[in-house]
Image (cartoon, rainbow, N blue to C red):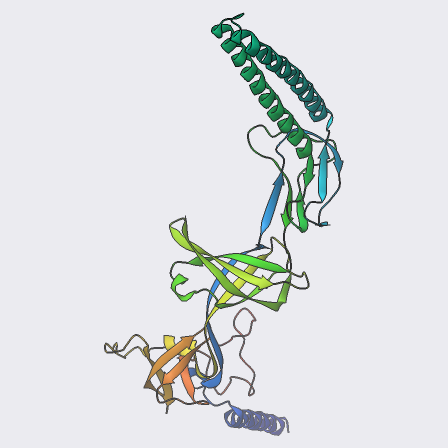
Length: 388
């Protein structure tokens, strides 16, 4: 009785094992294709030159002072709009006023001396005709009168200079714009000994901005004045702004043996979104195609190991491969515009929807004990293996 039960149990186990083997064979996934592929498609492609730079106003004016003194009043602050001629700052005028008073007094004294010397000359004219004084004495009086007149002119110039210095103690806006920088505070002493100190920086118009972008020498030939530029800033990563190339500066900049050229890009800023100092990532649009035949760039890097190099390819030609019954078949094409993801196919035996080989498929194949369809085996560390 016990032996019969054991035979029944063994029979059931063998039947179960057989059914499991049959189920594994029936449900085993098909072997993966030997190649990874990508589809040729149609769409928009843009060839561009990338560069970055700093945003700033188109024109900036630094406001300084020609005289030294202590700030007595400060009439504007950061971000204040100003009009041409508006008072920005006043220096203490006491020293300038005293110098002007002293020079005016010196001018009055010089004029008095000049009047006296002129009167002496008029009297001497009558005396010299009567031989009461010598000709030499007369000429001496005339020379003294001319010297007195020169002293009047010098004193007048000193008065004009001191009056100008008094006027210079009032700092006015040379242009209309917005104050974007203030370098002084109330009570601070400013000195204009050798270099004119900067008190304020005024941007003329923040509704128009410019980018000074550094373009590599390898790309500068594809940049031209008037070219369309699309750029983004870190503050608004999802928003694109547009501008145009205004100027390509001929002065090269060399840093660590890398030569770049400064390209000035102008952009409209009507809502004041763009602020001075922002870093812009710019794309200079070289060529655009609205309905191009697009080849994934990964296909350009695939070569079968046994394939010999093709030596008669032109600069704009390439060899790509398609999967024909598990074997790579070459296709010769001519390329046009390219970006980071796709290249334009100008000529060749490819059309939209066809697949091209981009690499070898290293995914594990299906097997009897590889698991149910769609489930990937796990590696020794417990992770899931993925195809390249």
